[in-house]
Amino acid sequence: MIIGLIFIVFLALLMLGIPIVISIGVTTIFPLLTNIATPYRVDTIVRWAVQGADSITVIAIPMFILAGAIMSKGGVSKKLFDVFAYFVGKRTAGLPMATIMTCLFYGAISGSGVATAAAVGSMTIPILTRLGYDKIFVAALVATAGSLGVIIPPSIPFVMFGSLTNTSVGDLFVAGITPGILIGISLMVYAYYYCKKNGEDKEKINKMVDDLHSKGFFRVFKESFWAVLSPVIILGGIYSGVVTPTEAATASVFYSLFICLFVYKTLKLSDIPNLLKTGVSQYAGLVMLLALANSFSRMLTVMQGAQIVSDFVITYLKTGVVLLIGINILMFIMGMFMDTGPAVAILGPILVPVAASLGINPVHLGIVMVSNLAIGMVTPPFGMNLFVVSPLIDESSSVVGFKAIPFIIAFTISLIIITFIPSLSLFLVNAMK
Image (cartoon, rainbow, N blue to C red; front, side):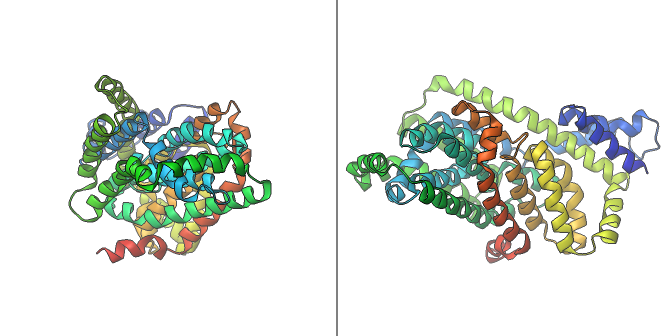
């Protein structure tokens, strides 16, 4: 009864438009405010909050945010796009496919879907529209492909999920590779169909690609080499065991500064204070969310909330398959109204023990949750990536969201495969142990 009341209060606050961080905080102290008997006190909540923010794993988040900001300011996305366009630009849907590949690689630098959509979109949308592609189609493509930034490792939501559920962040990173590639391929399939059906201005496209070819492979590769090498260094260091995810995140900041300051020379020392300010401002809200989400999950645990949810699931959702279907429906709905980070922070600690009781691997659960919530980044009414790309073409987010529906369907088909074939996510994890 008490747990039900707590969830009702939480949902009511969200429906009233109260910011998610404040809603979590108020809900956590609600039993104390109403004199409900609790096994914790205010100082206990504060201690839980500090523990949620004071973690070596959590430090990876601001580092990846800062590295992404540096790469974005340094124009790294253009270097990545050029190398992919060189190879596939003249094929049907070659440049849209190159855009998706750029999102995949840029996501392996920034760890953020919004940052990926912003950096790649601001560069590719003007190029593709000049080449004759429909601007709304291109914006929808970038908005959807940008959400790969939270699936392809390193992923900030994976770091959050791992730190709040005691799941290996390294395993989550490894497990995200194949699902991310599968989703990228599914988006390319639809892009190919669209371009085959609607045609392309081959004259303009071939001229642009010929200009790239005129530079020669070695020059294009030389210009793109350091950008392509970035995710290789970051992920290679983690998977080889040389560095932890946090150490890799810190190394990525110095690497990003080095190539943007001294190799590409697209960044000035005077830009660094503003980049630090951007990183801090973006992380401030996340660290508060992590701190209060940890208090919220601990509160539910001591109030027997997790056990109540587990008993309900075992009684009414008796198999792992049914639970996964239920989780996907819940995540899809939440993704329409809530950003990936808050949804992971709230539901991750509740669902992991429940899923484990039905034999669902927590790493697989994390992949399913984040992949599903990634769809929410491009679904109306509050898909964050829609709000990022729509100003770039002077259209409303709803117009871009409608055009993105076929991409969302392709994304969802991949999600179904990921959900019900756990080995797709776990075989690399198991192979590396």
